[in-house]
Length: 596
Image 1 (cartoon, rainbow, N blue to C red):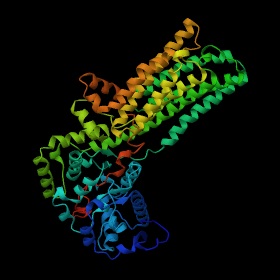
Image 2: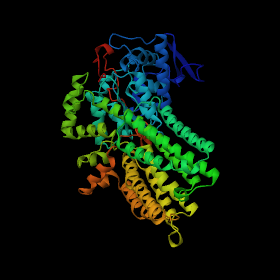
Image 3: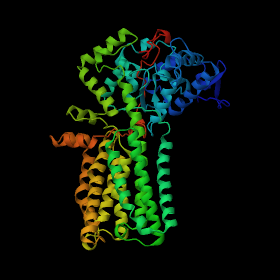
């Protein structure tokens, strides 16, 4: 396999380009006839693995460090993206594959070919580092092999002949066998200003292939999350020591009421505010408030002297719930960073893209005319433009999301889901009722089953969410939080306050909220999660309003950068560019957009 250092594997030979060791090549592939090999192996098997792409990225970095890949007048390597695909193809891929009989990089490594799982579409003007980072970060967990034009197509052979008939080109063949397509945005401009990228979107839409957007790793993500957790821990330790040193449990115990107010306000605003510095402050305040409350609860656990609110939520239970609340704000901080990254990728897909099929360009005019003629012949111009609009707005394009968009539902954020919202549903509908059942602080007698039923609904919802396709998780997470957890929490707070201040008996005050959770909020969130976007879109008037309400502020994403789609595991990957230099050098290619 490709390697950056060390000895060659048994049965392999190592090649050099300049001073950089490039690859361990299977001995069987060294003297192969590339043209004959590509004629024998179907394009649907011209694949590379995730490890191949990772090693390719390391090889390029090493070659750049040693000066074996040098800047050109058209490519100064940029500040972060590295050499673009044109430069890497001319100075690395072509020289290496020429020494192996002119096979593609993919068949050079895997002469028998590999089954197709993923199709990667991208633009050749992008930096190689940027491309590799996004593909590796967004690679579906169960995907094995991908079609990537620069590595899958034989760059030293007659690429123009291979793509002369778009419908029977390697791209079409690879995408037909793929299960989904991964779109790789870049800093140079929208890939959808290139006709071959548009054509691949057309094929994906025609064959109902899910399209997902790749994102880069978020720098400083876990540092930010760890900082919020640390704030919670420090505040918990500080409040505990304060009570330990002063011994004024009752006076300092009154601190729980303003702290609860701060946490409640922070929880509300963190769901409303867009990603910004103010949202960071809100998350920090919420985490600090949860820490203070957890510290107070731990101190009351030690003394055993508590009353009022703590006779309902006794200190051990309260300490656990407040700690879980601190984790919620930490996850919300992660959501904020993921959302900013997802919005950045969306803006890169918009940059320079007019939204009109006719404005897409190509390095070879004849290819452009053939592609446009094929799309026009099927009268799919509007459908292709709609697919791209959905992809850019939602972060993915699937049949269900497009169906909802056609019914004038705002699908912005439909392809993303919030980790914090899933967490709060798990806390409210699983952890919370289980503590009630353990303590006997909910319904008793004939209704003793209520907290167990509520926990069961929460577990069922988590199962539904985990098994949902990526295009359904955004709505499911929003439904669980906004139709289930948040209404329950609001009613629970009001009801407990009423029982505490008016009735004076709060020993079983959790019963009414838990009962309403079982018969109203739980079934409602389960129903919406099951029917999904498509089902809601079919409900006249109410469905559209419901989806809009749930997905509002849903740009706090955790899908695109946070968790790659599982369903894409067996799909194929292909670059959205023409996949080759098309016999044009980097100097003859457009300075901003890829070679197609």
